[in-house]
Length: 220
Ligand code: CA
Image (cartoon, rainbow, N blue to C red; front, side):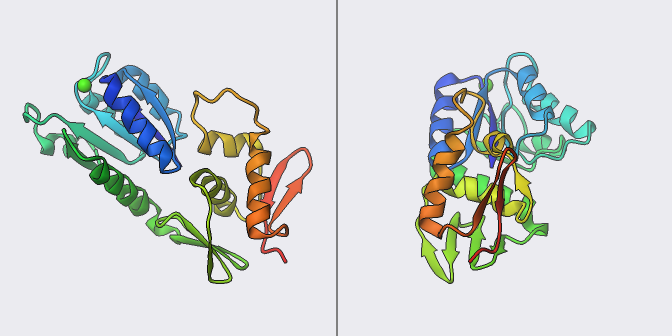
């Protein structure tokens, strides 16, 4: 899951990003409304955290412009405490939810998870591939009914494979959804995570398709 934070208060933006990364999300941060609009418009995001008072273009206009263009990415608006803007106005421009500053980090994470769940409701919240059950809401994995402890990043890599079980998923595609754009390292970092997943889940589940990527199968 990949999130975009559009917030010009740099300290707040960075602390949000740090916390959400610890939850296993890939997080990109921009500090300007226009840049936020361009990034969100690229379509690679599962959720956008959008401040209202922003340089370049305000959050309402960013949201309304995305919706007018048919972009349905879930948007969580971050509103100012003094209420200079009406919460209802934020929702009218197409935001899915709003959070009034200052908010607790715990509440933010709960809202983010709820929005991501709501979005995925049409799909099964638990992805089943053979003996594996990948629970996207709870961020946990079971093999034959027994929980397998994964790091947040390992889970995120497995989730990308499970979302397209049976298909070949390239390293670049995994990287795009699991790592943020600040990551400029080697795409082969994915191999490290796949090795860890094979060690924990058993070797038969993740098949290497040489030169193309990986495929999650029901396995042995
Ligand atoms: Ca602001």
